Length: 245
Image 1 (tube, rainbow, N blue to C red):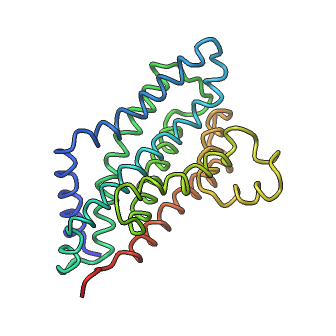
Image 2 (image 1 turned 120 degrees about the horizontal axis):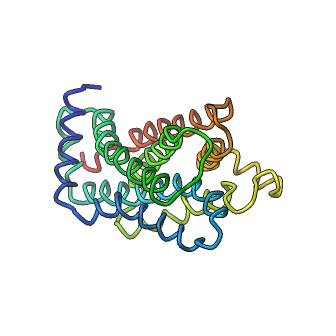
Image 3 (image 1 turned 90 degrees about the vertical axis):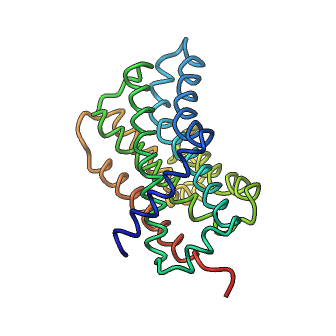
């Protein structure tokens, strides 16, 4: 992997995003707006907001980054941009790392905005460090980016890319422990939830919610989410190929 080529790819993607205000708004503002809406839905029950707000602080960025990344990458596939790039002396790892770096920088800004809003304006009450909360939110956003890059390889249109959301994201939301503790699920569902990365993202957020210090469980959860993001990026690089000879 060549650092200069990776940085050049990331710079190109960021220049394109700069001219796409709708995508920027979706990535940066929608998670914040959803948190504000959630806060006032539970205005009469702030304890409920405190109990699920941290979890959704990780889920909302994952969803938005998945949508934007999958659609933006597919747009480059269908427009022939990726085809032309792959015809150049540019490695697959350089290309995937460049996309991940560009969207990762956006994910950092998104996570900062959402976490700052939840803690200092919406009054989300957490016992642990806000920096740990930010770390998990950022890892979730990066995981969403990796999943979006990966599924774009299997879609032929932007509509199909959106259709992957019920298959990839919704089962994780239902089984991550947001609605019911995972250890109270049917054994088969609990076993499935144990291999889904969003389950560990929610567990990590809950660790920050309940403990003042970094726990062993938190470290495990953070490493699992980060490891899944790296693994999915590797799979994305493996599926990246030219469609013409």
